[in-house]
Length: 525
Image (cartoon, rainbow, N blue to C red; front, side, top):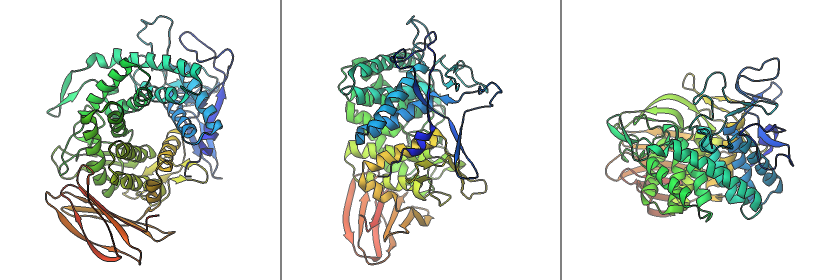
């Protein structure tokens, strides 16, 4: 197993918040303590970590932002809930339950259901449990429960997965989570879907106006929770309708062709049709799951375009950068921010596997392994970013002069997304085995064919991924080292496998479909 919860366990803490107007949680009188997670973890000279909050710390022990935040509490709850569901681990069940209770304390649930803040979420919390609705520096919305937000989307994600997990195990707790989820969904309906069906002209392209925070990225995370909830036969037609309407907006962010930028990607931000960022890239995963739950063919096609056309282009071109930009129709993009984060790498892994499992396109599982190899050394620094022995995921890779430099702090967000990636890989042994083939041995970008070659230094395993920008079939000569045979998979831009065969080692010639990708895997376990 790759998943190790030890470092995230070290960031968890129990606090006893006092109920205030609009803020309480499940059985607070009977169980006064809830769990939260520290925001950051700074690495010391001895290799240990010191947990810290956000912003400046005053002499009174209060941060200008806070010690804990709803974004990380929600996603940590997803980690423990998924681990419990996958393994039956009682400790993860309890951690997930307590984090969900802590998250619900941050949600604004006023007695007056006409209060415009109802269902929204306060972002920051101080070490003593007090809420800080207006952080410094100012974040929007301000106060943080005044409107739609990333933390509202992630609360829906956590609550949806929580209801699905606890429904049979603890019906009373699941019922409480369901009520809070409906409150959050009501906030989305009121604040976001009031714009349903409205379009903006952005970069001369009609763009949906009904995405949470104008983001397909944020909306996708809410959709993950709604998929888990509605897929559990909850009988909630309103939540299903909200899911379908949000999916319609996210689907509309798919753009490009297999030959032109952004190559079928689901773009993350509704106010730009030219830019893509790796951070918070789970929208394709949400579309794949929406297809599985609702049978939405347009969502399926958008997920496949992102997974089978854009993602191979990204993988052979350096990985999940923080910002790539190009005019629509261009054949190449300019990297404006080459920082890479665990969030971006995990988003590729989960999106590929969710789409593979929803559509049966097996080659996407191999691509998920290639995306997962980022955590083990296939990155600009050539260094492991996740340590299975400790559960530490480093905060990211900077590229100040084009060379990768590992940022070795390990805060909650990086740790969480590293673990979400490991949970996804543990559930798919094929992808997990591919992910360990992570040492770059070659990378080439020709006019029509781009390629990436990887090896495993600990065993005789090699992988080559080729992505075509040509409009007709191309052939490539590659070397399969050693004596072991290799498996070749030729796929079209939708991930449909056109050829699958085994070949001997040595110089071999493989075909690459127009706009498609080909993988050559040697000594696959």
